[in-house]
Length: 193
Image 1 (cartoon, rainbow, N blue to C red):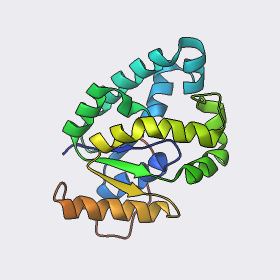
Image 2 (cartoon, rainbow, N blue to C red):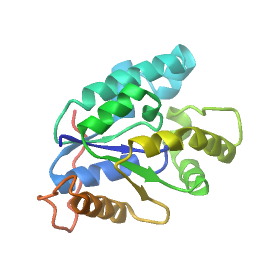
Image 3 (cartoon, helix red, strand yellow):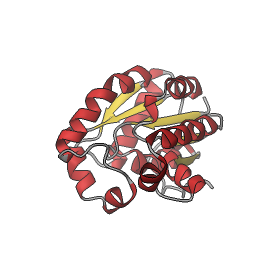
Image 4 (cartoon, rainbow, N blue to C red):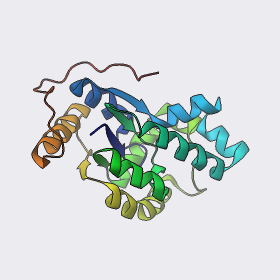
């Protein structure tokens, strides 16, 4: 296994969990949205506004294909990365896919308190945030279910608790033996560049 991919709606903890999970494994980590922004030279919100969602999804597909070919990497995938069937297949082939879940209300609260969300990420509809999250989740949940090796709920849990559950579930499932990790969790490393 070369890659662990974290999937789920934005605000479920992917970008917070990835560095700590990677540190526990002595791996590198990357946020695919940050990689896309670096390549494009602008925010995802700007890509949506100036080039459209289809251009963003193409950049996302290419970025994910490149990242999924690497080794010893934890990827915090964009919430919509699962929309592309080829990307889902590549995720599954690259290693375990962990679906981070949270209730709609939890996601809305987290996004409301995240100062970068409004500035960098586009609203995907013009509706109320709770309504938008619910609508998008109804579309994406079947795709998350399809690609996930397993799911971890992040409601009312610390990042450390989520990482520990992921490590234990990987070990128990026999999918992966985290030989490096024996607890406690180390300090995370910055993303690889």
